[in-house]
Amino acid sequence: MMNLLWLQSGGCGGCTMSMMCAEAPDLLATLDGAGIDLLWHPTLSEATGAEVVDLLQAIVERRQGLDILCVEGSLLLGPNGSGRFHMMAGTGRPMIDWVRDLAARARHVVAVGTCAAFGGITAAGVNPADACGLQYDGRQKGGLLGPGFRAGAGLPVINVAGCPTHPNWVTETLMLLAGGDMAAGDLDLYQRPRFYADHLVHHGCPRNEYYEYKASAHKPSDLGCMMEHMGCLGTQAHADCNTRLWNGEGSCTRGGYACINCTAPEFEEPGHMFLETPKLAGIPIGLPTDMPKAWFVALSSLAKAATPDRVRRNAATDRIVVPPTVHEKRKR
Image (cartoon, rainbow, N blue to C red; front, side, top):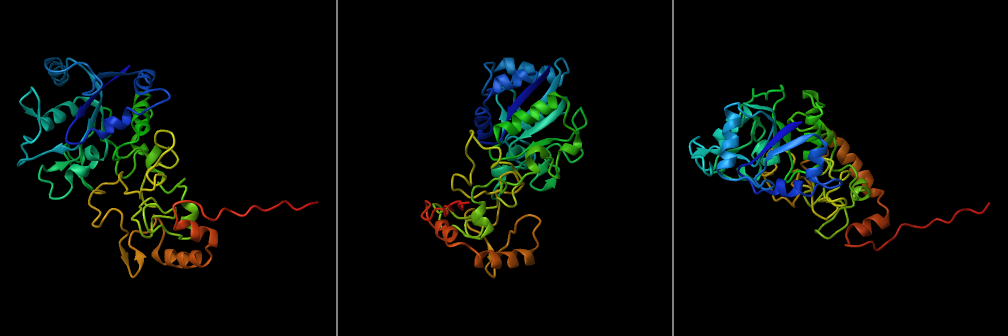
């Protein structure tokens, strides 16, 4: 049996809200089935106040073992590195000091969400709270724990990035850790679990026929591909959102909203409006992953020239106005 401690730092709590949507079985049944004992979670546990402080102190003093430390929300270093923008209630200590001490005792450390992984939304703009992730500050390694940090079992911080995370990304990571089935090679360049980060949001997107012909949406309600004009980054975003659906049936692109690549570091600062595609000479600056610019230009020209009338007309409407042709079988 492994135990799990969950702390919330500088964030909105959205990753906890998302995780509570885990189903078939539900979250607590999933943890129990994986052999994970929840020591404490600020939303799910009844314990509070001195009881929790005693638990944290027992872990720091090695009177209580800790297998998995999950941290949700960015770590607030300000002002001037003191961490006093986020004091842990009832302890008189900054949250960053507790996280440093507890991480040093844990066998595994998991950053839940892009805030805990890279700084995320909390670090956007001028970042007055000096927010960062556990082992990254944006794209730069470092963060609160430093680039050389390794948890007791030898792995770096595992970044279950997403804003919010898919509940199954969290539970699957925890189950793999509980089963001893996650190694350094199972993490990608940004230490995200490859079981979901080796996919692109583009995979399984129901707008792929429009993408193939570059039949584009021009406004939010249109059915067409949102890459060319609406800022969609699904062809570059590492996640399996359109093959591992949310709440059993949804995703951002299926709901008509462009993918903003929320699993990536610094997604919160795209340098342009989220729902606008930046272009140079009419060509999108952010091209699909692994596609050279010359190929994209050539293929786009050919695809647009070959676009069926059905696809072109449907792309600019909010419902199918031209259905696919029904071909009758030839009589023998």
